[in-house]
Image (cartoon, rainbow, N blue to C red; front, side, top):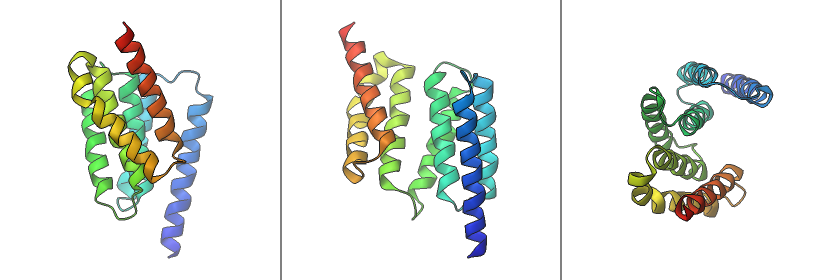
Length: 160
């Protein structure tokens, strides 16, 4: 029991540190984001049975991919994110709303990578994932923000 509490305390400290680092970074470069992903991979490896590090790793990977959709490392980062989301889905403690949010975000990144080809292919799935996430947890702030950004981005893309 004490070990689990310790694991949660360590995870919380790391997440707070990563969050504060992100807040104070003007505009993190792709190298900084990749370093953060590497740090989260190490944390996740130390706590393979914990949901938190996997969730943060998938989220950081998707954030990198959405801001650097054409970077050479993006496909590898996305493959890692997809694998991590799959692992999360197998865990009993995983929040289903968060899983739907991550799945929607993954498909949203795919659309950003190639809007012409992937827009029609994934649009409905992205919307369904965000709607399901919000149905499961109406207070899921990340799902609300991503859904709003996605809808706005699609409006802009279709207006052109």
